Length: 220
Image 1 (tube, rainbow, N blue to C red):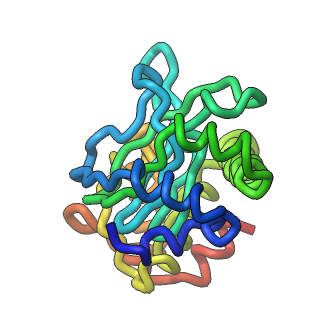
Image 2: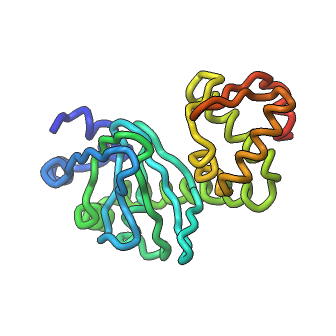
C-alpha cells in the first residue's frame, strides 16, 4: 500500500514506528459503487474511514424507513462514527452510503482500539473528529427544525453550486429531498415556484441557477 495514503492520516506523524507498521499491515482499501452501503446499523463495527476519492453520505434511518441526512464527507476527510464500538461515550449508530464511486482506506476497529489505548494523540484525534461530526449533525438538525423549506432548498442549491463551481446542479428532485430531509413532492413544488420567479430553470435531472442573488436572499 502506498505510503502517501498513510501520510494523509491526521495522526500518522504521532505514531511510533511499531504503531505505523501495525496500521500499514492491517489497513485495507475498499472500492464502493454509487449507492452501495458502506456501513449500516446491522454491520459489525467497521472502524475509522479515510476517503481517498468520492463522497460518502452519513444518515440515520427511522423504524418507518425515513432517512435523515446528517452530513457528507469527501476526499481527504476522515470519519470515526463508523467505529462507535471503540468510543464508550457514543451510543448511537449511523449509516453510510456511497454518493458516487468511492475508494476508502479503512483502519479496523480492533487496531483503532489498540492505538487509542496506547497513543494519546490517536485518542484525542478520535474524540475531536467525533465532536466535529456532531457539529455537522447539529447543523443538520438546526436546518430541519428552524428553517422553512424554501430556505433549506435555497441553501442546499447555493452550497452545491459553490462546491461544484457551477450554477448547474445535476440532481433529481428525489435526490435533493433525501439530502435536505424532505419529501420529493415538497421539493418539486418549491422548485416550480423558484422557476416561476425566474430564480432557477428546471431540466431533466438538473437545476440551473439563473438568479443567484435572489436565491441567497431567501436564505437570509
